[in-house]
Image (cartoon, rainbow, N blue to C red):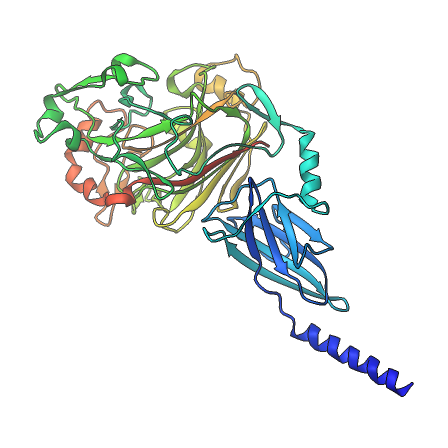
Length: 487
């Protein structure tokens, strides 16, 4: 009897030592082919249950609900594994998680961790183990609960990944080049969009759109910008007016565009209505530059001029490192905006854009910009942090106020039709930089006035000032990936 008592005490002692010495190790990530990932902890004697809460490329705090969660009550081989077979991950992504481990006699341990997906992450086949919770979720998904999202006019399944590009190459089956001079557009940006590899290319798995001076295209004769002509010919992809977008002749105060840039879109391959867009990008830095990260209307159902059919901005900021408006309010590149455009008039332009001050150099690092477009609202976020949760507007009333348009089909009009993706970089223009704003340490006044016929000329005359702030790749828009999900 004494021997059995001593043995029980010894066993209790061993278990107590094991419990007190166990610490939760870092999780391991493996890529599941053709789609998904496995997050796992190695087995240790004493583990009876493991729970994961997971976010991809977004930080997560202890006890914060994840985008994915699972309770694993039985191990697979020698690991406690959470298998997600619905979400694509790739090298460069980060799996952010917190884990709850039940160990020994009721001891609970919780840890927060980050594990990167790298090219060395082991790949495993989607064998879909019988006891995987994701298998059950996948089986349910086969039933396809229809979403409010449409693609090409057809409803799709809830939470479905409906578009993705990781830019391993520049896939021209997805994207179309825009080759045009946007002088017929309502913003009249001071650029021409051309098909030049220098301005638009893929390198190291990223899309790079970088503006340059048009002198590199027009030639060494600096006077040509004042007296030359540029004709895009048959390759022109005019959107509104071929007579203006395909050819320009410089005369009097009208000059050729001083900046060459690029713009690509999915107009002929992918359009959708309602969904969540995620873009991992670095934004351009340089005076009077701004990124084009847009959703554009597919059919211009409500009209063409002055944004009657709307424009949705996934993310927007001004490239000036220091920029103050006429009231000395900061509007520099430390702010990020998103929302919609319904007019080129300044008093309406800012009515529907929402912003937040970041105090980060958004050209230095990649951030994830997301826009959720719903049947009754927009939600905007950066790196998972929402900065406009309840952007709810009866847009149809503004359609009547701004455009006199009463032929609408819902309160979301014009944002109740399908839109397509468009990305590029622009400079200047007549709508996005308010008059009387001042740039730089020396508080240099904006060199042109919005709506002035000579605006582009005055912008170009200040080229020595603004061009020196365009520093190589930092002046470009760099995109790591684009993903669109159904609601």
